[in-house]
Structures are given as structure tokens and as C-alpha cells.
Image (cartoon, rainbow over all chains, first blue to last red; front, side, top):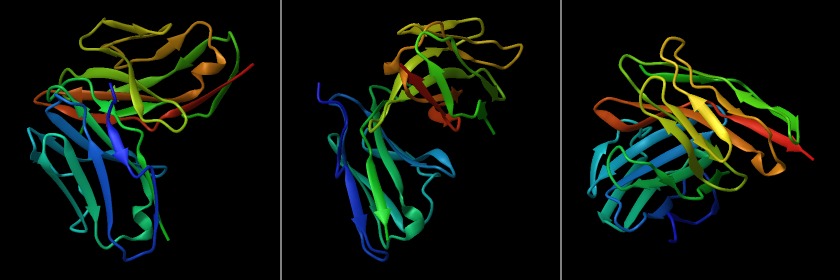
Length: 113
Length: 113
């Protein structure tokens, strides 16, 4: 089992640039989550997809953030334009069912200069 | 809203010492409670869970009991190893939004040989 796969593992970019983070959930899982982890705010749920449909995006900070799930095996989180305060570790997680155990990927460490 | 408060770290212990990490919660209904562990450079992994009052979750020598009367879910391990060094997160999910995990701030545990 490959687990949840995220890319890139590290991203360093300059303020104003577009950033795209990628996630491949575990095969057969119908729920996908994007989280952000910072020292100040801890772990926050950004968005939740079920069967590729965004169900809860109340955690998305602002319009600069967008997420898509074009099919069951791929999701992206995009930040455009990026700002230094977006620097964080972004985790993708998936679960077999909506309330099932969530399996986390290794995260993408984003640094915006 | 629902929230979790856990003991602040960092916690430093010697091998074979007893570990306790306190966790209390605030919830309007009957939440499910979880402990997640994050090893360095990795994503979170579910360590144990309990879904109703008086349930005890256990895994890898760790235990936690769901105490409704004290709204607590303290994590314990009788004899820690160096490999237990990690960040531990208490979390809850509740009701219809059972996909939504509310995490505590995390407690960093370092075990010295």
C-alpha cells in the first residue's frame, strides 16, 4: 500500500507566485481532506471532498486558495497569489468513508519568501 | 464550538518512564475521541480512539479512557521507549459532521536513552 502521496514535499517560492500542491489519495477511499499546520494555529481543516465533490470548504482562508478534485485519484490545492503568511505544512488525508479513519500523507512544507 | 485542550509540552522523559498527556474536551453532544501521533517528518497516524463513554482505546502500549464525567481522554503509557519520541495530538469528531476533526495543539514528547 502506497498510502497517501503528496508532492512536492518541499516548496520554496516568492511572494506573488502561484503554488500548486498535489495529492493522490489511497485507492478506494471516497473522502479527501486538505489540512494546514502552523505553529500559531495548529492543524486546521481547509476543505473536505466526498466522492470528488467539495462538501465543506469553510476552512479555506480566502479567495486566494482553491482546491479541485477532478477524479477519485487526484486533488490539487492552489494558492494564487501566495503570501509569506501562507508558509505552513499542508497535509492531505483520505478515508474510506466520511467518518472513517483518516490516513495522512507526509505533507508539503511550503515557504513563501 | 467543539474544542480540545491538551497539555502543553515539550515533555522530556527517560526511557522506561511513565508518560501521561492530559486532554480535555468541550462538546455539545457525544463526540468520538482520538489520539494521533506524528513522527518527525511524517504525517499524522491514528494511535487509538474511543467512541463512547467509558470506552478504553489502546495500541502499542498506549491507553486512553473516555471519561464523560470529567470530559477527559488522557493518554498514558507505562514504559516509554526512544521510538515513542513524537508529537501527540488529541482530537474529537462529533455528530453529523463526523468527518470534521478538531485537534488540540499537540504535545512534543522526547524520550532519552
